[in-house]
Length: 252
Image 1 (cartoon, one colour):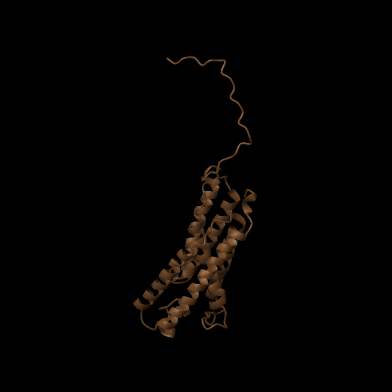
Image 2: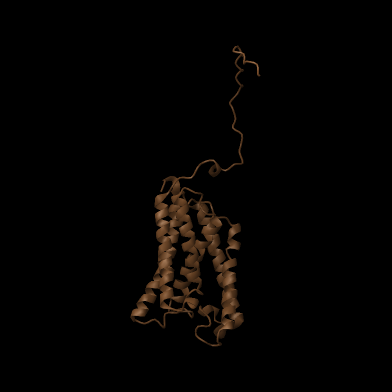
């Protein structure tokens, strides 16, 4: 049995000077609970549905194994999965996905859109794919699919990043890691071409990766230039992420 506490304990003297707050290594996000962001959740759900619609149209218009082999289709499918997971986290007030994952998904769809508009859709380039397009009903559906996957999806992903995503979550050390998927895709494309019938039109999906036309030396040179361009785009993305204002000062 403990002794009773005396009632006449004197007050402790005041600590002289101004009290100082000790620095803490715990980040603010570890103690500040996240909030629900229904607007961000709905927008990301719509972006995911847009990307899935483009992929579904492509699958309906061509051979599924061929369509799923395109970099654009794979990157759009990845973006759709990331957006669905991000929408769920925003709706349920959970922590956002890692910036390395969301940044990679954004980079890949933006690169796919830029390559299409600067190389494949430009009739002035040696890699143009516009020569065989016709004014048929199937041609119109192909055009719609290209606009969805190469224009609407990248623009929607960029707007989500600029308006609904906190800045400063991308880092320069991630830029090199983001090149692993394009490098793996290069190996996949060359291996796929070796396994198909030689000199067939379906052997290589992109003209700048066509070994029959450019040889391995030319294809590897094109891949090197494209890889350097992707890395430059990744570095630019990281720099913009740290320079842009914070859109989350308003609770979306």
